[in-house]
Image 1 (cartoon, rainbow, N blue to C red):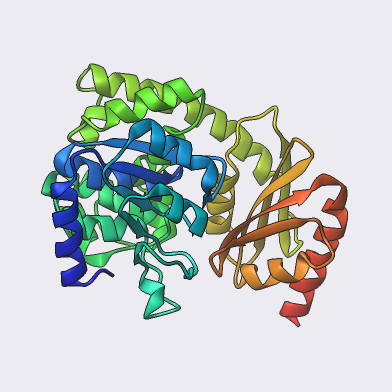
Image 2 (tube, rainbow, N blue to C red; image 1 turned 180 degrees about the vertical axis):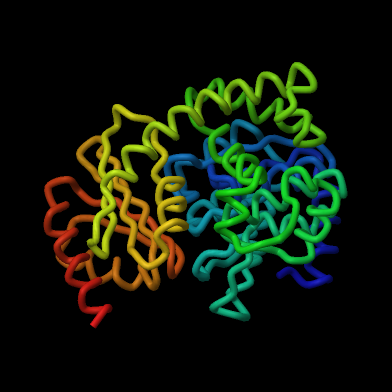
Length: 346
């Protein structure tokens, strides 16, 4: 968590910013973190990193384009020193992935003091924001990143009982309660043609309550709900296929192609929730690579063993990570992973 001093400093920097630029990870945690901070003063621009987890030199052109006075980086695991040096602006980086060694940046990561800490970026953004009307955004972001903030959930249950009648374990809340639809919404609204995504997020910055969307109370809510419903229908079709591959094997492997929409992270999360004793590997073939989401107990360490001798890379959290493997090395990689899983079970 952020300290009181850090919260006060970030609030002041946001308040004084005239044209901030927000770089955020294109998942639910990143988007909600952006919304929480942006909606404080509604100044500046947001830019999602949807195809990479590294903020590198190639994004300096965005700095030149927007000419911000300050840069806020949210839920992005890697920021290169070259980007920091080249931006020539104050940078405030809030993240919760493995700690990086960088200079010339205001870096906030709970793992610096506590390596095992797991606090989503949206939860820290809420510390800075604390706008009561944005509670639903903060809770959705935390749940989406598999984190249950008890103190926020107590408030949420009281304020939105139709979405969450009572607190429970994460899997139950996300996959059996109406709040789960809200969690999926923040993932799915970022899918599809970039022009539609940009329009959706612009509209979303003006939404004041989840009822506007799910009860379609106004034109903005109707637009967002229509997009969400169409994308969710595509997801349910892929999920049905993925469930059919579950066997007695310790690993659930579902592969699909770029001809279908990408739901890799969401499929991995949902299958893991229903099969917590297994390892889940969702792999989407695209442009000669297998882009994967992996879930399971200590899966990151198993992934690192499986990558030995393979053309590919990966990283993430202990029990939830991602990888990109060259298609020609896929069979070797999966054999390595199988062996690592088997060895860990002995």
